[in-house]
Length: 300
Image (cartoon, rainbow, N blue to C red):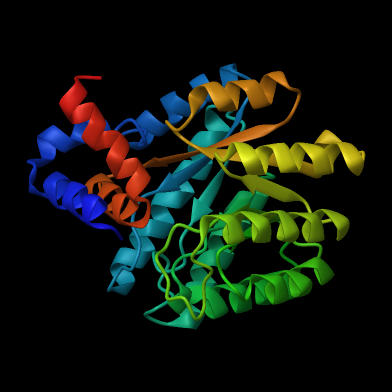
């Protein structure tokens, strides 16, 4: 991270939470489930789908994990009751991955059963590299056990992702492909912008050629243009893929993608852990911190 980004992050973390909150809330639906439901209703009215994410990860007790499961259950109930076009994303460290892998598996299975009752879907988010292998092993176990309403995430910055995708193709996995937000060492992750971009497109083509359903998760014009080209060359149907974007980011671009006739899903995080999530996002992606810093001093 360069000195300018370090300065911006340090400055933001020195600000009182009430000052940071209005800007953080540009990228977060709010603190309560009702806030997320309200946001997803608006998103749906614009012919977009939603993914709802209860903020929080790396819990330290079983009680915290079980509470996270209950919160995600409530999200599924609310999606059904409010007739939303949305699903749920979870983080395995929130469900107890680092406490007990069997406990985590049991928690995810329970949520998938609830989702299945509503004919809904759960996406397992990818976290930092310390969890990659365990996340993919748990996903493979779920699929081997007959669970079909579950997907996973692959990060294009990780050097291992091409090999991981080969395995996922054999399962016809439902995959969200993103660049990867976590800062990782050079020996396991690509560092350059262009090499990550090129790997993203390579992995995307592999997944599409392998007949996997892909969530193309990016705000990068270069990657969106590349995806458009693949979609046209391969004569894909709308049911073969979707684009995905974060709530509050590049709103005009997401409107354009929908106007161009593509399906698009908006990732909608919410919850009491908004501050920790925001600071973590700023550290992982200094560009977002720069947007906040500019807004603070421009009055935007």
